[in-house]
Structure formats: C-alpha cells, structure tokens
Length: 182
Image (cartoon, rainbow, N blue to C red; front, side, top):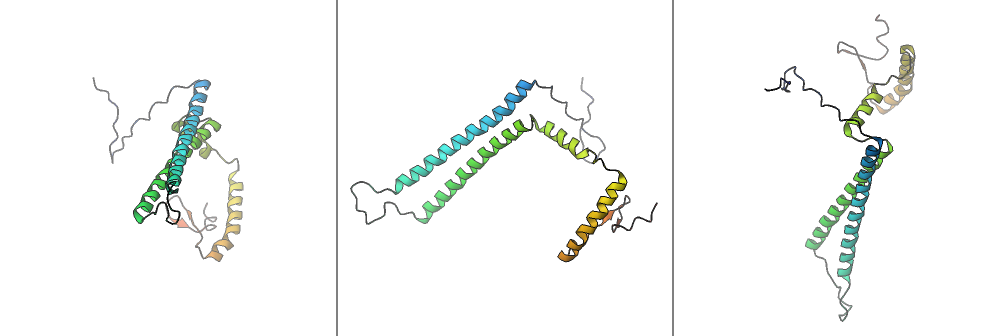
C-alpha cells in the first residue's frame, strides 16, 4: 500500500514532514568523527602542499642551464603562452591548498564546538537566536532610545536617512512617534 505522506507542492499549504532525527551517537563515535574530519583535512593539506612544492621545484629546475652550455643565454625563455599556463597552474594549486585548509578548519571547529552534523549546528544556532535577552520591555525600550541618541548624529553626519520602525500593520513610522498610541 502507498503511504499517505504529504508531498511538497509549490503554492499549496502542504508542507513536507521534517526529516527524522538521526539516532544519538556515543561520545566516542562523535569524537572520532570530528577528529577524523580534522585529520582528513590535515592529510589533504599535507598532500596539496607536497604537490605544490614539487611543482615549484620542477619549474625552478627547468630554469637551470645544462652543464656544458654558455651562460650568456638564459636557460629557458618564457613566452606568453608559458606564462599563462604557469598562472593557471598556480591558481589551481592555490585553490587546492585553500580548500584543503578549509576542510581541516571545519573539522577543527566541529571538534572544538562538539558539532557532528549540520543539523546539530542548525539546532544550536536556532536555540541561541531565540534565547531571550533577559531584559524587561521597559529596559529594552530604554536601550533602543539610547542607541537612537548615539546613532542619530552619526547617521546625519554621513547623510544616511535614519531607519524607521515598522508597525504590525506594515506601515512605517519614525522612531519615537508611536509613544502616543496605547
């Protein structure tokens, strides 16, 4: 029998069900996954550096003249085609090095912050953004007014129009104009 699960359709009110959460991992498996990602990035970085080093040494060795030749003529003259090819190779090697460093960096960050998946990162970010500031509404209003006082002269000096606050009905009102409404 076919399951009666909702399918997402554009323009309809039907929403696809959220994917099921992955089963909880043991601390050892989490740690090994995080450190493994970091070590894989370090290995990839070492390999890319070795390839870059070999390429530079090979290019440098091609500039040395053969043993029994005159030293009045350069060993290798680079024409514009060779220069373009060298530039493309250098760009490729630099990209390889940066990407491998990025893999190592992401692995190190996931280990340092104890993250083992993108879903976990998303949940933690959402929880930290939804956390309340701990201030009462009067204190928040005082802080907003103080910030408006501080930024007002800066905005006017730079010639930037001061941002306006939006009302719930979508109309924009300048800050400080909505105190009379109760």
